[in-house]
Length: 378
Length: 157
Image (cartoon, rainbow over all chains, first blue to last red):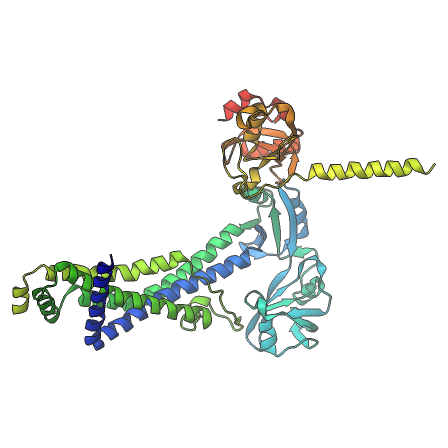
């Protein structure tokens, strides 16, 4: 036991020394290898972290939202619909919601305007998100000027700025009272933007949605599961686009690695011949090549994953953010929750380390089985 | 003449407290298993049924069908248990997913919904709810607690 451990250690020692002898070649291989692992790991970490954040946000979302359609487009929905839907068996509550977007031409930013439920907001007073406050240089007790859809200039007192912890959800948010909202957008009373419908038994969601469409053919019920699927698809699509764009880099690495790993140079062939002639066995040579592959790919894997982790979770992925996050004037300043699942690491490992190690073994096995005399003469 | 109202008040208090105790069925632990099929009941919270016994901690069952199996053959699943020992049964109303008295509930067998143990008896507060459910999900005519016989259970399996 001790002896075989000693043998492994000696061979590993020799491997590292021989890697160091061809410093330039091996270091450049390592650098490119690290870069590839870094790119792939960054994309996976970033898209899964974004998906997780979206999931967290949507866990609070209503199970079903009902919109009214007019000529196939989203329109205001009357409160009468809410009463009719609440009468459907299995529906526990219907909440009319008021929310919308306000484009601020002076800064070019879009704000999300929302009326908090249960009438907690005071007329004439608003609460703004951190991004809105930064964009306009607002603090508590300042005035927020908005221009209504009838052309009037309206002034609202800023009661408070939402804390920075809620930045990802609430950075572009303006909370206001229902009356102010209706005045700003010139909306008739008795109408909502959409209805949030809660159903106690999730098995009944599809049945309830069917009954809503049957009773009100001009409505469109949207289930939370559909929204989740759409988010998943969007992030997967963006992540996939990134990978496709970087495909050229990945392929060139593959070619490079294959060339380096699969074809042994004449010099390496001679080296194996000499090792065999001074008494190394085929198994020892294979062990040497195995350790060589492990040393290169494991350190590349560890460093690449580490750099990707720092890049994504400490610096919020500055390299991919524009491509993966979408575009807006107000960006939330947020840091993603660091979380890496063992499954992700396993997938990365099997995509990068295992093929490389295997690719190095086969040609050395072929070289190690030939006659040392012939190898040295070549 | 002051005593009767006070007594009456105390009596009313005790009655209302016991009513609260009946309305609030016990909650299962993570490791509670259905005595009939052996499944963990917290994995399927929407179907859970509860049987309260007078000399045993409450039993949590994975669905109304297993509850009736237990009621008809209690000794088979819990040795030395007679049917008389079952004090109260709770099932979950399909539409509200809140517990109701299992003896007052109406059950719809043979609908297109499957519970954790396959075909189920779907419990409802009222016959109106059962009738509306049958328009959406089919099923055989609704039955009351006393009408669920061992024969009816066999037809479900």
